[in-house]
Length: 212
Image 1 (cartoon, rainbow, N blue to C red):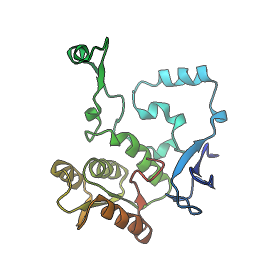
Image 2 (image 1 turned 135 degrees about the vertical axis):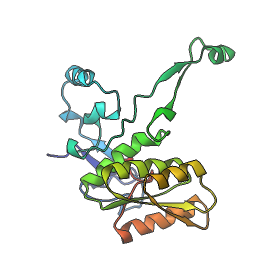
Image 3 (image 1 turned 120 degrees about the horizontal axis):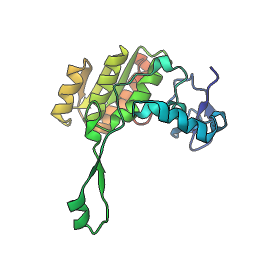
Image 4 (image 1 turned 90 degrees about the vertical axis):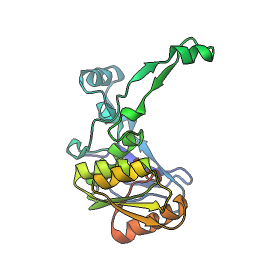
């Protein structure tokens, strides 16, 4: 299938093909973003009808807008479609006519990170990664561990020693991730991960990855 998206550097405009495992621009070092060819979408009204016919309310209901080439590679745990709750008393306290709160804790691992991780791990599978890696102090570790387990990929989580939410650490370990604690802060852990992903042949799934 012809790709409907490319990676583009936000700094210099350098473009990269979807089959390249790249996280930052090789020319200038800046971050990348996903650039879509919207002209390939069906007519606006027709695509809305397609989405409306899909019964499950999740991020993949709108899969035409997401960077996956083959639907067989989609790794999902039912993320998205979280509920909105009316907060009348709180709204009144702030002088608001209406206030609604969206509870992202209803996502599979209890975090909004699942919305991006479903796409990131799906891309990892599509790119032929043998494993995934991240640095984390909490939600990212649990989310990546869960989705990589669903995909059957090895998962390595690097955490700053003593600086991770214990509940999330327990989640990551229960999902089967290998967790390594290092001295320093999150930035130190991320620096190590950025170096290790290439040397170990693992797919990086911190937010520096444009697909996540």
